Image 1 (tube, helix red, strand yellow):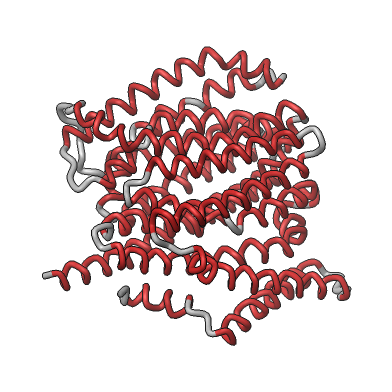
Image 2 (cartoon, helix red, strand yellow):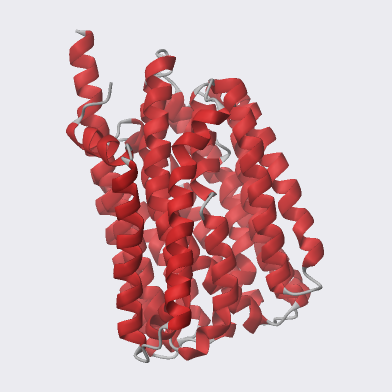
Length: 483
């Protein structure tokens, strides 16, 4: 019986990871294609206006969700009445927050000295209410590892919103095109969630909210700190500098986030429910977690540092010369992105073992140093981002200590699982930079292709010679041979 359960878990894990990868990669590819087209059609100011409001949308969505999704996924059983109570809470809070932001819109426009924001904010913030309508369905699908349905829904919503956004951009609607992209993406996704899901609201058992809140409150505060400390950059840059400079920053951050999210979201989306199912078997759980960390290292390090050496070619070829000012921002963010998945995955490990309060403390440390970097904004945006890079490194080191203390993942084992891939990726970066310095290829397209091929060879060959275990781990995961 136990063997059958393990076999079923292995099969579900593999299928879920494949579908989750298709979801994250497919969605990010759609976002990338739409972003490339709109970057050529719209101005830096258009992106800056949307970026100025993003912090409010992000924080509002976190408050509305209140960490209940993770709490529902983690529970052994949930009833329809309990799901209904969470749904009513999410919807009611979203309406209250939207009403507040609706009346505050003129003040936001005055703060940024951007009069267009009043009407833009009142439209864009409707996404908060629309998003609240699908939170419960997403939790149910995730809990049941039904990532195939979520994948199809997300891709359909992304494509539909993308097509309309491109059409509006071509027609000259400017920043309104970007606003409608967010509204339509959330709206279509929510509509499809209701059409495809069998769950429907019933009578409510509000007593469950108190039980969930004891766990979810730390998740909510953690998400709030994490997203606010980064999103506040948009607010500060938009206030201190012009909308055009904010537009450059938001574009650099967007493309870095696309790369990070493809890897981090794919792994963490599957890791959380599977790690939760293994929390009664700490030995197996830790072994599985270490494999996930090695796979994350294997993927994220060459992706971030490889794009670092290709940053200028990427911007010129894909976005055109007018976006060249994003290159310095983009490079700093790419280096910081090397460590991004580890904070998220460590958090998943803490949460599945009931340490939501500890995870909150790690986010407090991370947020304190991230917010301290704002003191550098008066020097330059580059200085601000170097401060963010420093905060990321400090946060990573603190996470190492915490995960060792609470989950028995020794720091020496963490370094063994992660640093070989960082070291080989740094070697790759150095070798390509030297090659680029001495070579005079002339053709930017040929230069990009040569860098890409050389980078892949300089990364994979040393790992092969060093006998890297990650390729074996990935093959075992695909074959369902988790021990």
